[in-house]
Image (tube, rainbow, N blue to C red; front, top):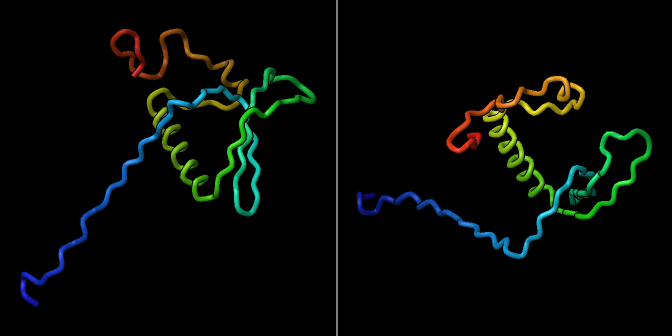
Length: 121
């Protein structure tokens, strides 16, 4: 095999995904129920108006996202990286509300660096 016949490595193909979110309506959720079938993961999002109430709480799910397990695993990875980046900038996210209430930082102590115009970086 001569030099001119040497196969060249394949060029790396890149994919660009452009998302049109012009018709997207934002909504807030402080509640998520995760269920699954053998083929799909189901995420129900809603608003719990009294998240710390005792006893029965009725929450109306206002959004349902159904995805396959491949997309679910990519979502898990993306959320994990996003939370890791956030905690690296602002500090650990405390999930225990009792600890969070007793360990609130003093005003001005955000855990991140305050940049120009008061923006936390």
